[in-house]
Length: 346
Image (tube, rainbow, N blue to C red):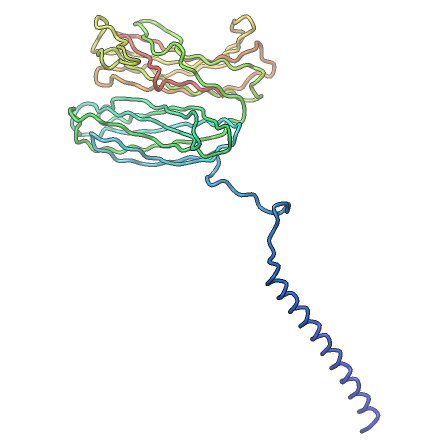
């Protein structure tokens, strides 16, 4: 063997020894990690800043449910059921928008349908129950819109649904099958909000009268800069019959004032600024319905309005006042019901 061959052989021997030693170290390291993994499983601690928070079991607002139901008179049904997650201290506006039609060619000239939006916190506490009753004329699309405010003292779930009620079995429309489309939506208010408390309702509005029936005052210093929003629904009954106007255990139409021709009414939603003395110092905006005729066959009516208006940069007064008024052209008096009449100001 030459000196060159001997030198090459020694160099290969040194590389083999070094490589074997490195391989032995790697084997020992892997074995140690495996042993540690068996006895000390890794788990993030609660104090770890990267540990994810537990998500709520339901989607938070804004949240909405849209659904369709089919009924046959007489029948009751509940649909559009859903649940959203509410945060303590937050106020939520829940709105309902529903429409239905008595099918063309179905028996009877009109058909009664009652609608109720219900929302209840799973942990208990005040909820929402708003809707309306109307007689749907054959072939005519009838709309129901109403709204309410809801909050929870602690984080928790709120269940909402819409109830449909066509209960009468001794009417011409018995056996009529119809569909109803409905949506409810919950959204955080993000500021101050108030709702009408019900003072002064129910009441009867005489022929020719124009009366304020619902009012909400909001302190100006609690209103965030930007748009003022108001939503109202007025539940009305024309005095075409005594029994149809009952509420709180009494009839609100006198027999001498009954008229089968019913009532033609206009509702108006008005926003104003009021000074410390109670006087109006600025008109913000007004929204009105078209004159609506409530005759013997329609009898019930739910009229809704919405108003959005920007507040001035330097508003006068101390209070934002939003009111709903009813003008009755007759020939019959009209009843404004407490149940299902609402006014919400945001």
